[in-house]
Image (tube, rainbow, N blue to C red; front, side, top):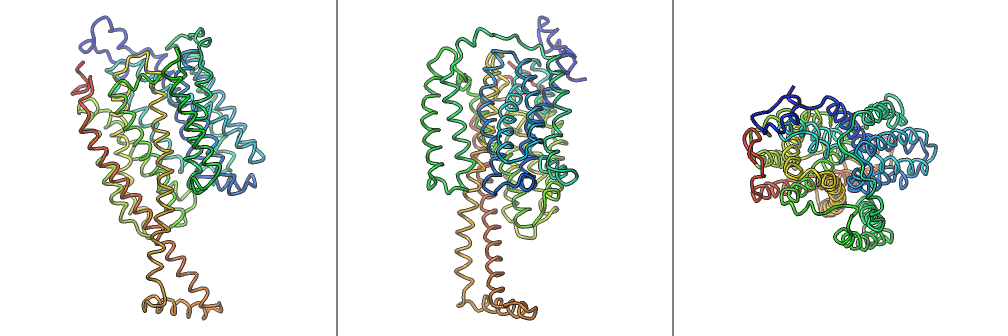
Length: 529
């Protein structure tokens, strides 16, 4: 087994024992991976089935998005905080308590009888669950020797990217085959197992309880407002017409003021709530930038495909899930290949191939029409799935692979935060572009579909005659249908615009990759110093 092989040739004899992996640590690590998978998957399986939850709780259309927004706001606060908490109470206590709390709040969410209860339970679930995600990345780069990272990095990369991708499939199946309650109940048994195993087997570090006296409560308070308000503005901005809405303005001002306080505290207090010194490491900074863009690619495309299939093709959650499964399968099959290549290729080459594949897939989607179905989406989805894995593995290694162990816990929280913020920023921009470009294209189409255009008049007359023959008010029905056709076409054209912009973004990332120096320790067989 690769994870238990010795590597006397690679490491000095003093670290020979370190190269042999302790089975207890392997069990602990894989239990942590399952916990992270549950926390990330939970966002997408619920997202795919909001309509069923809305019906079950008799919630309004303006209330139901908060089932997701509450989770995301709470999670984005906890992710950077987790490194500091792990130092104070130890990874063992943080992770096992987070797993147990996530499981309990999942069970509570399944018992919700109204939308207010659901929003509270989801906020608790997001906050506690957010503690599990960075801990896995930190453990991977702390407890495994460098020679094993090409085995471990694809595993966490696969889980971090596969969970959001197969979420619509799992969510659609659960809500169709059982009921929306099972979106939450499915976490209970695995959650109990994960909490038990992690409490029993994690022994990576010791608590530093003395640090609680130095804990920066003002830093925590300002970070919560800064990130929470930012997430709210990004999530709700487009739906509320951005700065024309009073609540969005208040959220933006609160986020900006809290950011000033947070950054001031982070650079001046003895024990900041988040240690930003990791950004002094050039590789970490570039890795975080690439992670931000990966967030746009991961969450943005996971949002766009189902939106097109639901809005244009009229698919339900299960049909969307079955179509989206291709990306997940491509990732799963590419993970071992990415691990193999990571030890043999310059990470910059892998990332160039990955971002190039992303760009090729989104460029193909720029030709989108109303008739595109499973097979038209097949190749773009395979390109997306393979490219995600080819990018994620070297990005993880570049960002976290050269940091000293003492820095990794805090850095892991920051690194995961960049991916989540990338997703939030990406979705906000995508939604805004879709809305604005749809209005633009509709206005252009409307200029051509008018009484002065013989083709439009002829089409209108034909449709009116058909409706009249079926006993309807032909003229009115024909105008309505023609307007709906123009609206649909405008919507498709706006999707194409977004895919073309994403293509430009991924091509720009290739230029970014070419600008970075070869990461320390990278090279054939993972050697070098």
